[in-house]
Amino acid sequence: MSSPSKRREMDLMKLMMGDYKVEMINDGMHEFYVHFHGPADSPYDGGMWKLRVVLPDAYPYKSPTISFFNKIYHPNVDEMTGSVCLDVINQTWSPMFDLVNVFEVFLPQLLLYPNASDPLNGEAAALLMRDKTSYEQRVKEYVEKYAKAEDVGVHSDEKSSDDEVSEDEYDSADDGMTAGPVDP
Image (cartoon, rainbow, N blue to C red; front, side):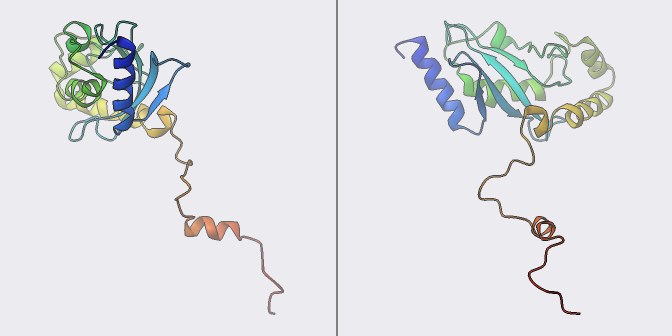
């Protein structure tokens, strides 16, 4: 790539072409939200999070800043700010990595294999080390409470034009209306 801005554009396009919903913040390509699903076969399965991504001017030579917008219970995520403690993003970042790596590899690995010895959320780390079953139950409670589609701004009443009207909706639209005189 000839410049950081071209690389930023390319990485963002690759992310948008994947299975990720991307919402731009402002007009530039420096800040945006990405909708992220919890990994299958984990306590985070079924959850959806909105992550704020900030790309520095020197991206990809400097790592992106990633934070969870809605709450998640995890030893390596600050519950108040959503900041993520992940070595590959914070310390060992390389221009060889891209945004797709972050969302397809790094974050799923973080959720699947939390590092309780380097916590941002001490309570979650202590619970994980003391009682993994209770920790996983708390994760599931947070998923139910904070990580549903409506928590990231996706409304369940938003339908595509391809959706057909359900029989219930069709029937309710006709309530109280008749097409002509009713036979006695």
